[in-house]
Length: 89
Image (cartoon, rainbow, N blue to C red; front, side, top):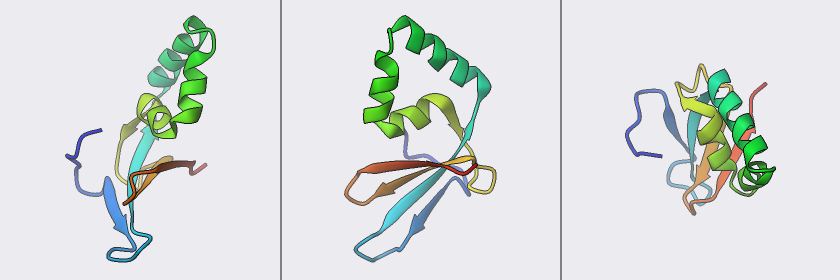
């Protein structure tokens, strides 16, 4: 994931506090989900396990960056570099 974001794709929550986090907006794409499904079948289920262990990779593989207003999935990253993903549906 690069550090170049358009306006509205990225925000900083609790700036300057101990629990400071970055929030990124992503929109799910059907073609990416289909490719990941095919990859899951051809990897005999290993790919979903990798996505379970690395939730940020799951978001990056299934979604494209978009504004936070249009996002159906958000990725939260703390300043300690751990990642949490959440569906907004």
